[in-house]
Image (cartoon, rainbow, N blue to C red; front, top):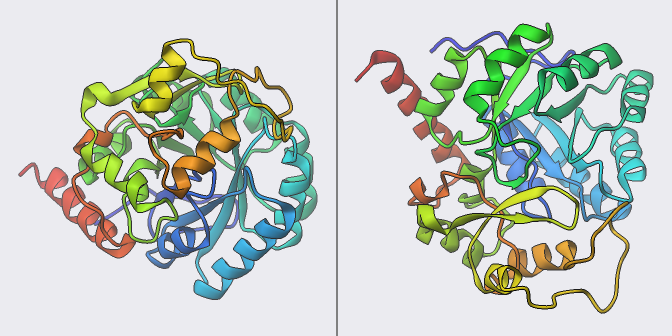
Length: 318
């Protein structure tokens, strides 16, 4: 099967598929390396990690693969600068960043030769990113999981961003199968980013309860919340979300100051850690809009095999 020509800086993955960097500790070395081994780009989610933990995860990923490994980091994280600089010092292949916009990261990337890939949701921000030196942009629509920067569909955004910039455009949001990948290519995307499908993988660091909640989710279970970060977030309904919607007092008793700005309506770091560790009723379980269509937990290798089969099927029109 012929894929679009896809290059980020000097990086040329065999497969134009980037695994989303999902925090906290959902996307770690095992998942990122497994994706890189299949020819895609694997991302370690650096948000919520300490500098030393990130160093260990990068080193572990390097032991597991010679493929392309990057990090994903929220600009909203207080330790944004130190984590980005640490990743660069550790020889990371690329930096993907969202939940805010940093001009400084382009300077750091230019000095080190590490490609910088911001997550954007408007053509204007994509153009600004290109002028500042972005190697590519991830265009994330409303269908995505986690923090969202738009109420517009990826299907509407990608063609507009593609027309506005010359750098590669990576489509994200609602891409869980080969048919959606082919659809993104038809819109003009050079590659895709997939998060939700890779959560339901054997290599993902989420708890088994977290993954099984994905398999049980129905369309009506996927809801939007207001995150303390200051952005809407897409997640799966559970006891924690019901309490949030009911107006219960979920303010933290103590604060780790993990964010530059925080409404402190609840502690998002602790809520994400609880669900990652298995307390999925009292934690925050981020997911994409189409999570209800995922019915199995597969190895990353088998996910790639299925994606290729689905893409070929979509191409043949069967």
